[in-house]
Amino acid sequence: MLRHLRLDRAVRLGVQWFFTGTGLFGVNANSAGLFTRTRPELEVHDVQLLYSAIARDARLWWPGRIGNQKYVIQCSISLQHPEALGELTLRSADPADKPRIKINLFGSQADVDTTIRGIRLARKIFEQEPLKSMTKGEIMPGKDVQTDEQLREFIYAFGATTQHPCGTCKMGHDSMAVVDDELRVRGVEGLRVIDASIMPTIPGGHINAPTIMIGEKGADLIRGRTLESAVL
Image 1 (cartoon, one colour):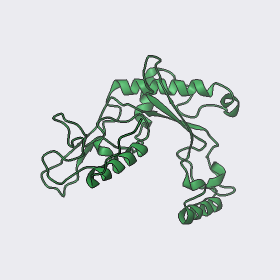
Image 2: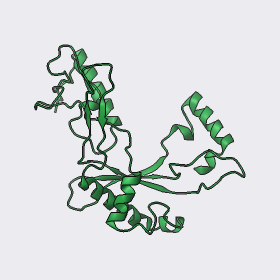
Image 3: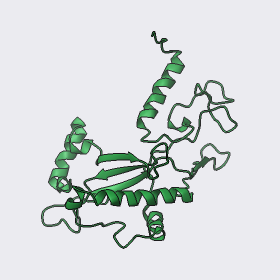
């Protein structure tokens, strides 16, 4: 993948994507993904391992000036059901003020522990063939980072979000619910919320598909359309 970041090739691929929406720059850089459990007693997966044939910090280069970039296989550990949740609140009564956002990333020890198990699982996978023969060593966190405390410090230093926010305006019937089961804002006439913010819990996976489903369902609710009963 790094060879495609050579300046002349990258420009050509960028132009191809811009005018046709196709080509290497029109797809996600992640080549493979694995949903799995870090504890056997779990009913559903708690992490996703995302594999990419390029480093996140890779840059454009040109012949003779590749610098310190390396050919790598990167594995990212993504929490699927984080225990620590953030907050989205009003900053003031002025509607022009930006909201106050608290991400609360790794605000729960359970989330840190799950990520540590995910790192250890990723290492175990890379110790198996054919990956073992394809790699020379571990760049990050590095072979010297082994204890839970060392891995915890690494997570705090390099952990980040995947920018898939949801659940700030949840659907339900309890006192914390903002919209009802027809996506109508409680206490406000003629207003619905139809996006990922109405999810009452974080789905175990990427939110793109369920967000599309919410949009289609919301459109049906507004138009008064319902599915015909299935005939068995």
